[in-house]
Structure formats: C-alpha cells, structure tokens
Image (cartoon, rainbow, N blue to C red; front, side, top):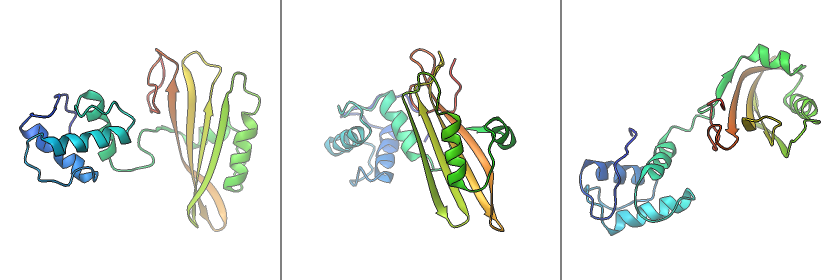
Length: 189
C-alpha cells in the first residue's frame, strides 16, 4: 500500500476505503464485504486495529493509523529497518573473538558493562536453525546527547563447526527532539 494521507471515517466512500478494507482484511481485522463504503463494521475493524497498535481507538483513519497499517503490511524481514554495519568493522571495534554465539553475546555485554548513564541492557541469543544464530543486543540510556538507545542485530552461520558473523545491523531511538522515538535505522541528529 502506498503512503496515504487521506483521513477516513464512518460515511467515507471510494477507492481509499476499499484499500483500507483490503488492508484490514489481510491483517484479519475485517471479514465483511470489501465495498468501498466505511460503515459500522469497517469502523469496528479500525477500532480493533487501533487498539492492537496502542493508538487512540476512535475509528478515524488518519496519519498515525495509516502509518501503523503500512508497517503491519510490510513483509516481516527481520533485517528491515536496520542500518547495515560492516561486519569486519564491527568485529574489530568490539574486539570480537568469534567462537560461538553465546561467547559473542558475553563479550558484547562485557564490552559495555561500565558505560556511564546506561539504564538497561539486554542480550537475546536465538537459534532459528542448527546452522544459524541471531543475537539481539539492546542498550537503553546512552551517555549521548542525541541517541537514547541502540539495538544491534548480529547474525551468525556455522560452517564445518566454526561460527562466523555474516550480517550486522543497528537501530536507534533518539533523545527527544533529536529524531525518531521509535526504533529506526535513521541516525539521530
């Protein structure tokens, strides 16, 4: 779906309502006929979607609801919305000695143990398959006047019983007035 800025509410009609109904249907919020008429069942579906996204549940489709709909309809590529980081630079700057995913996670945690102002840190290691691993490392409360939090995604693969880092990405949450308050690949200003 394209970015649509048209405000829709009960009584609206037309192609934008059809797109809205189709989107809500794909997300299993709407099961009625797609007819391009914003009636009570469409409004109910919009309210349920808004509640699921922690939006104001008023049944009116404005910029925030369109944005959340567009995001919900995006393919679920775990790498989307991450800024790609050069793997060799990441390994070098973090002094990573790749032996296995858990050892990498411990080393990342130890590297950031004493950061001033840090409020919390979380590291999750998952093994989607026997040959792949994913580390998600999140630090909130950075001593930076623009970046409030950073999340790194590190993907590893094993070849002949040896793990190697194959992809690294970062996301940021900015300080107020310095950029996105949601996780984003955009650098804070």
